[in-house]
Image (cartoon, rainbow, N blue to C red; front, side, top):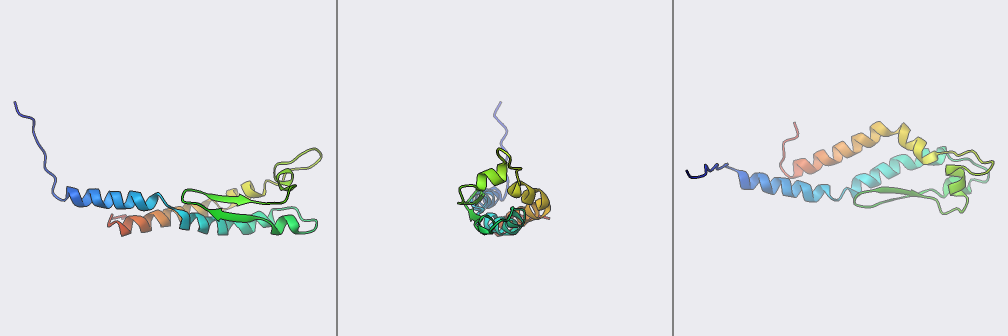
Length: 123
């Protein structure tokens, strides 16, 4: 008995749309930059201040799949994570926790825009 075959009209268009979406979702650098900028103020606010150098030294960079936060001051890791007789500030973690809704919203918006550009109905 021959194998049944199924033909889907519009299959090529659907595959092109999903491939276009997949390609654009592989690079979320713009969204990661938006999230980084949204968090950097809270990270600085959560940082202990003595001279202000540590607080003002926080930087954010965006890559296709990540937002990164760094501080070039040698003592930043001790202030952030704690050490002998130093309570941790957890400035990055606290900023992340306080902004989860905004972070989720930024990624949802970014992916929705990419889906629309790929002609994928997001309703």
